[in-house]
Image (cartoon, rainbow, N blue to C red):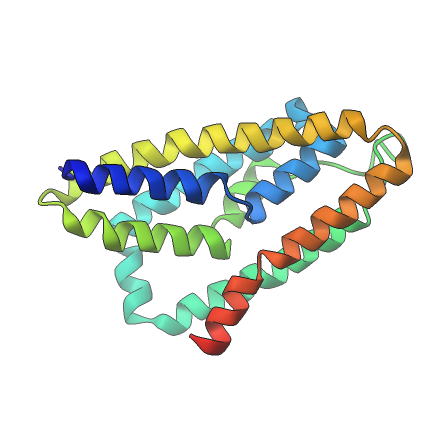
Amino acid sequence: MLETAHLLSFSIFAFVAAFTPGPNNVMLAASGANFGLRRTLPHIFGICAGFLCMVVAASFGLTSMFSALPQLLVLFKIAGGIFIVYLAWKIATAAPQQDKPQVSQPLSFTAAALFQLINPKAVIVIISAISTYASASASPLHATILITSIFAIVTILSTLLWGYAGEILGRVLKQRNHLRIFNAVMACLLLVTLLPVITDNLFG
C-alpha cells in the first residue's frame, strides 16, 4: 500500500488535476451553460468512464509503452490537439438552444469516453500519477486500486461541479448575445489548455 505521506501527496495531486481548468472542465462548463446539467450527464459519465479506464490501462503497461515509444505519445498529443481545436470551433459557433434546438447536442457518453484517449491533460496526468505514485508502493495492485478509487471520487465531483457551474452561468446569461460571448470565451479557454502541450513539445 501507499505510505501515508505518498497517499496525502497523491490525493492533493489528484484534487488539483481534477478541479483545475482543462479540456474536460471547460467543455463541461460550456455544455452546462448551453444544455443544462441533466443533458450534460452523459458527457460527465463518459469522462469518468474513459478516464478511469485509462488509469487502469496505464497501470497495466500503457505508461511503459509510452516510455518505450515516446513518438506515440507525441502522436496522441497531436491528435488530441486537433480534436480540441475542432471542439473549440464547435463551442464558439454554437447557437443558443432556442435558436436551433434540434441541431445542437451535448457531447455523447461514447464521444466523451473516447476523447480521454487523446486528451493531452488526461494522458499526462495519468502517466505522471502511475509513474510517480504506483511505483512508490510495494504492492502495485493495491496502489492501482487506491489510485483509481481516489481518481474516481475527484473526477465525479469535479465534473459535476463544472457542469453545474456552467448551468448556473447559463441561467444568468439569458440574453442570446451574452451566451454567444460566453461560448467564445470558453472556446478560447479550451485553446489555452493546449499551451502547456505545445510548449512542452517545442522546448521540452
